[in-house]
Length: 155
Image (cartoon, rainbow, N blue to C red):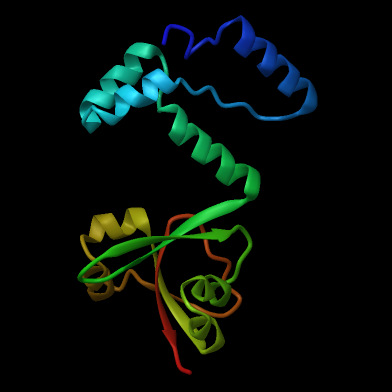
């Protein structure tokens, strides 16, 4: 616990070796992660702040893995659920539609798109549509991290 923010002798040796190799490291404490599971969101934030870190080790590991593999996340949303989908950076709208189902990619027409922050401001996808905030993106659109998309397709 005490070594999480600054590391300990062994951790720091691994970090030094990784830096020489140009590799990234993530510190994870099994004890801290076990304690985080038992806490609510606000308690987690306070606990981590007390340890001198901004997020838990598992979250850091996931972020580092996404960076290393070039992965991004986009969302779909409807009345019943909002879902996150993982895709590789540089994928076009039809390719990311194919992550959901190959028919979506095959019959892709266009994607109604909005960034997640703008969607939160609107309150709902339908309200964003009513305000004219949705963008109509075609086959060459490179999907961005955090895009919220509705795919129009015909098979």
